Length: 138
Image (cartoon, rainbow, N blue to C red):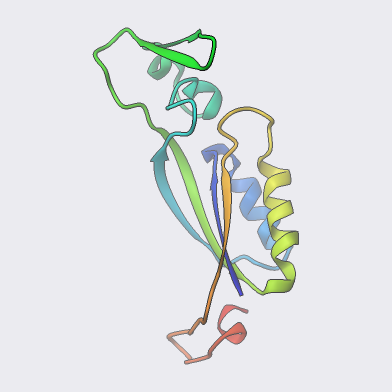
């Protein structure tokens, strides 16, 4: 078994849930999270289409030789972009299919598309029935 953790754009959640259901994996955990990547929260309107443009007016990107420098119109503030964190546990033989499907739905080619992590799961237990291992996740 593997645990797939995906950090995605908020507006991609409905499509992602639909594709997982179509694959036969409707069970997942969803959390609202805030974070930032290499852009340090800059370009937040492009990273999150649901975020009001007015929130991002305080940030301007200036190209520099090696990176982007942030210039804030307001005092220094930490900019974090709201995202959704999905966690799903699946059998080993479907990990590639599930990951490719999540990528297909979420890939826009722009900064902020997200990240996917795959981790091993040693065991699972369904509390209600006491089922173990693969039986607990199906």
